[in-house]
Amino acid sequence: MSDRVITNVNLNRLSEEGERIYHEKLKPLLEPQHRGKIVAIEVDSGDYFMDDSVVKAGLKAKTKYPDKVFHFVRVGYRAVHKRR
Image (tube, rainbow, N blue to C red):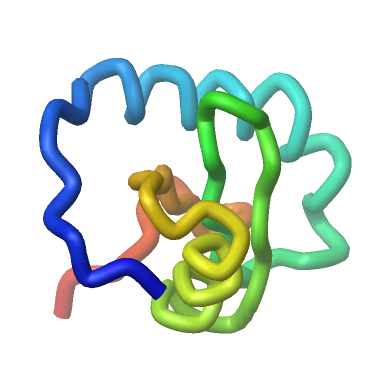
């Protein structure tokens, strides 16, 4: 896995594209069967990686795309993390 710092990421584009991919392509496919799972979305390819936590999904994503930044979604929820 890469230890390099990733720069020049347009976070607005990452978020907008990630949400678009999730709502148009993944939501109908993943809900309600995988409700609560975390999805890491690579927005340039549309590939996604799912697991029980951000760390696990992120590690799967980084294995295939070590130099990318990912958009995370919790399937069936408005936010990845809940405030306590």
